[in-house]
Structures are given as C-alpha cells and as structure tokens.
Image 1 (tube, rainbow, N blue to C red):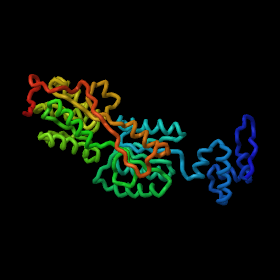
Image 2 (spheres, one colour; image 1 turned 90 degrees about the horizontal axis):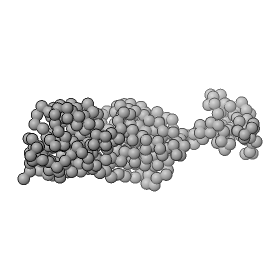
Image 3 (tube, one colour; image 1 turned 180 degrees about the vertical axis):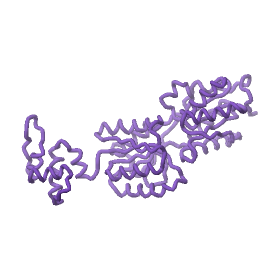
Image 4 (cartoon, helix red, strand yellow; image 1 turned 135 degrees about the vertical axis):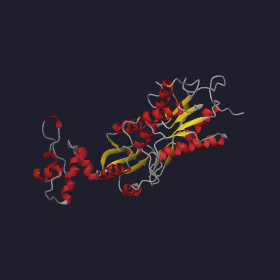
Length: 355
C-alpha cells in the first residue's frame, strides 16, 4: 500500500488522502467512513479503515474502533451517582483513562438489577474496551442469571470485565473485605470500652450490606456482647436520621456504627438535635471516609475507593499487572476523630459495662 500525500496546508489529512492510500474512489472511502449501508466489499472496507488509521485521519478513533471492533471506552456501572463512594471510584477510573486517551462513561443504575443488565448489554454492544461493575448485588434478584450470562459473553469478547465486589462470576475482582471493615471498626469501639453498640444497617438485601452486617455481628459475638441492637437503614442521610429518631425514644446505646458515612451524618446530627452530647454520651462512627467526614470530624473506616477505580482502569488499559484472573483485596483502616471517645463511667447514661 503506497503512502498518500497530505493535502492542504498544515499537513491535515483529508478523506481524499485516505482514498488514495487505500487505492479506492473518494465515494467508496466516504461510504466506509460514514458507515453508510451501501455495499462495499469486505477487503475494500478493511483497506479504507486501515488507511484511515495509518494516516491518523480526523475521525481516527472511530476508524481504529471499527478495525479492532473495540472502542477506547471504559464503562463504569455504579449504583448511585449521588453517593460519594461511587463518585470516588469513578474519579479513579477517569483519571487513569484520560491519561491514556480512553473515554469514561458513567452508567447510573439506581441500584436496579434490570437497569444494571441493560447498561451491561449496551456497553458490550458498543464494544467497550472495559466494563467495571462497581455496585453490589441483590442475591435474590431474578436478573442475576442474565447478569451471569452477560459476564460469560464479556469473557468471550475483547471487552475486559472487572468487578469491584464479589459477584459470583468469572472475572477479576478488586475489592475490600466488607466483613473485615465492620469487624475492625466494631473492635475499635469495643477497645474504647463501649459495650452496648448499635448498628445502622445498609440497604436491605444488598450483598455489601449483608457482609458488613455479618462483620459487626461476628465482632460483637467474639467479645461476648449482644449484637441484636440493629436498626434498618441504608447508605443515605435520611435512613441514619430515622434510626437515630428511634434511638432517642429508647435507652441510648454506648456507640453507633452506621453502614456508611452519609448514614452516620444522619445519626450524628439527629442525636445532637435531640440533646445528646457526642461523644460524651454516645460515640458515632461511619464507613467510607468520604470528603465530608473530616468536616463532621467523624470517626470512620477509610475505604480505598479512588484506588479501586484507578486499579480497575489500569487493568482494562493494560498498565497494571495481575489481570485477567486476579483477585486483589485492598486494605482499609480506622480513622479516629472527634465523634468517638473512651467511655466515661461518670457521664455515659444507660451503658452496659463489662467486668
């Protein structure tokens, strides 16, 4: 294939250059590059697309995608676009993708398994270079079988699939240990002398919520403490406020752990509005260490959300060793701040004390 001259000023490549390079007519080159339905022989189409790629013709990303049957696109399927947990993951993906000329598409499911599957299907159909599933699963959802079939289809294609939580499919996983997250945070509060600890649960039926609840129960049981003081909740402020309102009607706990920072903010503000002194009367802790946690001076478990997204993007792009069969668990740690303290036997009313 001969090299075509570059036409015009400044060396800009024209469609005519592509046609000359591929040894086809301008009309044929136009039909191929525009995606027209006019019939063009497969070998001719391949020559035109390859010429467009070789000459870096203006829509070169499209041409390359057609040649490789893959776009420089990474789809990030998240549960809630307003949740800072997912926002940090998306930022981690986008930062890495931008550096390598990949486009990041954020797909918000509102934690609907049906919407999640629909986005999964769309990303596969558009030949995304990678699909990152960031949200947990609802184990009883009827859509799970379709999700597993989509994951199998991804494994047979050029699309790289990465899970940021265990979803029981054949795909690399980058995650945190959600059971250990609540176990370590609960053990920290027990170490401060707290014995009557309440837990505000995550979204009902979600795998992440179930694992975090299991971790809380295990830590309490290991310490010989009652793990039954639990309140229905969610990952937002309002569920935390509702749980705290119930606490104010009964005997206050020593401490409260919420399944997310947002829920902890709801607990914290509602207890304070009810006249409870934090942390003198009740300690409060959350999970995530989101961008507002420091403003609230909230004790929390720091999750590496940005790193989850960044590593997943690197796996898709090929800049990180370990994929495609890897399973990586990133570390988390307690961040002590002003909403927790050692239990005060003089001031903590109604607390149960060991020993």
